[in-house]
Every structure is written in structure tokens, then in C-alpha cells.
Image 1 (cartoon, helix red, strand yellow):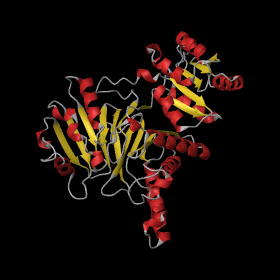
Image 2 (cartoon, one colour):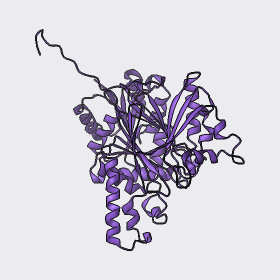
Image 3 (cartoon, one colour):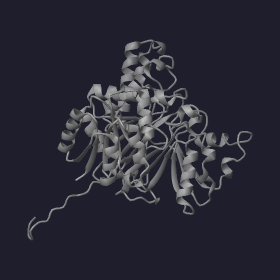
Length: 453
């Protein structure tokens, strides 16, 4: 039986949560303050800790930091609960080591969903170590964020939590390593891959959503492309003025860069995509043209363990056509056209396990950015809810948004989800964050008498 440690100084709340957790099949340990909780955690090494933030003697932040300093508790997931919904508190909780942050009064369904995601039947720690290129299909698919920012890199103390690198995501599934976009986040990804593989060859696939600078500017600094034993397949659609190869080459020409694309020693193959469905190994990939200046697509990766949709730059048609600044002449026809286009997008992401989507602005900011090709948080949530997506990551963070602002947008998105009564899980993408999809479940076996069928 899985063990949960409940650290809560208010007795009524402790009784309520204890009963809930027992009904979900957990063995419950209880502590009335953080110091007792830490002693119990070291003794019993629980899979999950649910801890109140504001407690005397040892608060929730201190509990998180202490747990994360102990290697024997590396597998333990932590949920901090609090009556305060401040964005800064949420950010500080995650920085201290919490996996989730839940605002009271606690919604039972919301907390139950979080627990199921954090502690599936098989311990995530057993599946999270990708030491081999050729993962089997019995492994969970893994998504890791290396760059989450839009438009331009934004390093500095105000963006250190969510990160300042531009778009780049790593996906490992069915024996493939797929990279989504080559913003500046691809540089640290390349360094990590080089350390991991050492002298072993790599076989990588890079999917480009579009060739705006923030999605390709990191490619000249991608270390695996400079090793002749590595294979790199780059795929994307032809741009509005020149092909994919021409665009990637031009940013590396003199006087912009000292080494040309043709001088990179890696075995690099660039493919101009023609079809909206193709395969990468066993993974079926679908593409859709989205509403963004130039030729821009979103991708859906259908793996044996689940699906990932990546739409880093998208302005919902209906939001755009509904704005007074849109300039639509025949408003009724324009809105009907917009609805159909958005319905196509919803069908594209229907029932997806992980949705990574453009949420650059809040609603008020969008009013001054109509037609720029980016969405707002409210629309990202609405699309995800209509499509019945399971996990939503807000993406392409605005360069003017500091960490506190993004945390506020996350809380707003979570509130919208709860008000809609949906089961959608919402977070903001941040550098270094990993998400496992399709964690294998242990099969239950029963013995039968001989001759039984």
C-alpha cells in the first residue's frame, strides 16, 4: 500500500484530508507540525507528502527544502496547501521543491487528480532515467522543456524560475529523440546530450514549427551537429520566401556567423515536408497550419504511450475576428469562418495527453496585440477544455513577463478550469521541467486451478 504523510496543524483539515486519502487507498501518516513531519518522512520514506504552508516551528517551505536535501527521499512527491493564492507564494513553493501548490478550500476532485498524476502505479523515478537512445515502447514517453520563452531570450534574475531561453522541447518515445524547434534552448540540450552519450552516436530528429528567429536561432550552437558520428534529420515546411535549408543556411552566413551550415561535421539531412502526416520511426506525426504570420505549423506526436500536441505560435481565429481592430467587412461570414478554423484546431488536439500551446498574453494585453499571431491564457484554457486535453502547458512566455506575472497567469488558468468543472491539469512550461506520459501500470495476476479457463 502506498504511504502518504499528511502535515497539517489544523485538526479539522487534517481529519478531512486523512479520510479522503484513506478512501483513495492510501496508508496515512499524520503530523501536526513540520518538525514531526520531517522525522516521520525520514523514518517511513512516503511516496507522497501533503503539507500545509503556514505552520509554526517549521513552515511548508522549510519542509520542502529539507526533503529535497535528502537523497533517500528523492522519489517523494510534495503537495503544498495554503489558504493564500499569491503568485509569489506558488513560485517560491515550486522553487523550494514542491511538485504542486493547491489553494484552499481544497476541491476534492482537483486534489485527487493531482495525486494520481504525481504518484501513478509505477514509480516515475524508475522510468525517468533515459540512458539509452533505443528506449523500448514499454517505457513512458518523456517531454522535457529546454526553452519556453517567445520572441527573444530574456536572461536575468526576474526570469530565472521559468527560464529565458526561446522555444525548444525534447521528446523521447518509442526509441526516438525528437526535438521541437531550435530556439536558444537547444544549446543546453546539445550540451546535455553530449554528456549523456559521450562517445556513442546519436540519431536525432528536429521538427521546426516555423523559421521565425526565436525558433531557429539556437541551431548554430547545437553541439551534436558538430560531431561526424551523429545523424540529425531536420524537418519543416517551406517558408514564405525560401526553403528550410536556405533559411537555416542564411543565418550562418558571413558576416553573421563564422561557420556555415555546410561546414558542420554532423551528418545533417534537411527535409522539406509536403504532407501533413508522416512517421518518425513508430511515431505518427500530424501537422496543422496555424494562425500566425508566414508558414507556421503545429505538430501532434502520437506515440505508443500517449500523445503530445505542440502549438507554440497560434492566435485563435475567433478571438482575432471578434476584435474591433480585425477590420472584418462581413462580420457574420467572418465569424463563421473563424469558428470553423478553430473547430479544426480543436479536432486536431482532441483528447491529447499533453498540450503545449501559445499563451503569450493575458486578455487585457491581447487587446493591444491583435493580429500579432499569438494567443492569450483564456483562449488556451478554452481550447484545451473543448478538446478534452488532459494536461495543458502554457508556452511562449512574453519577454516582458517576469516570473511573478507568469505564476499569476497560471493561477488564473487553474481558476478558469475549476470554474468550468473540467479535469484539465494546468501549468506553465519552465526550463528543466519534465513530464512523463503513459507510465506503465503493473499488471495484476491471479492464479487459477489447473484446467481453469
